[in-house]
Image (cartoon, rainbow, N blue to C red; front, side, top):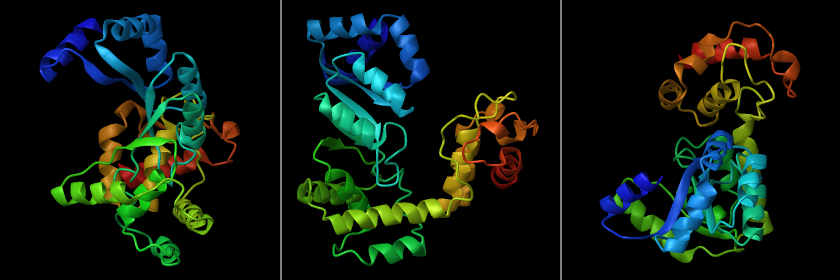
Length: 281
């Protein structure tokens, strides 16, 4: 870590970093870093003044998030959060837990990788027509996150100057606790409308794992469900083939049935996995 850190300082042409993250923390990454003395290393970096504030970004389940939060006096964390993913990964529970510890909260994926602003289903459009706020889809999703007082910073991917300017306007006008109970209820309705489009009720609980054949069942199902929810098959085919390793793809399923009794949603996983293979491969 000393080697990487020095390379980072050299590339940034600086001798200290204001906000430094341990990126993509999850159960395995965190266990590995702890084993290799990351807590002492972070203490050393802060004591030396080379790091002013230290935090972590996160991609795993809430219990893992809470364990990491409790392990060190972090200054901040970076989590995925939007009006659809209120229970995914750290979720709202994790946001509140970290904030109660005095940590700054950086939100990433407030637009779900742009999926909340494109191909809006008619069912969702109908819900937004009930809103008293005249907002476009990006503004609507960002206002939801900015409405939470504990959120310190929102990160949104921008690919054009116009998007930068629009996001600045949104951040300049959005206020914490500005959304009424009626407006917040519309967000819940929109979330339910998206989830209702999913072809199966997988919650990503991972009780079905480990698969004897190595299939990443929740990962495969997640991409498959997103393709239906957001109406973009080609994008999700690309995501499936790029992000899901070959050894964990749906075609490795042998329909052995070891997962069937473990699924609390009673999904016929071998049957559905064959559909994933046919749809996304």
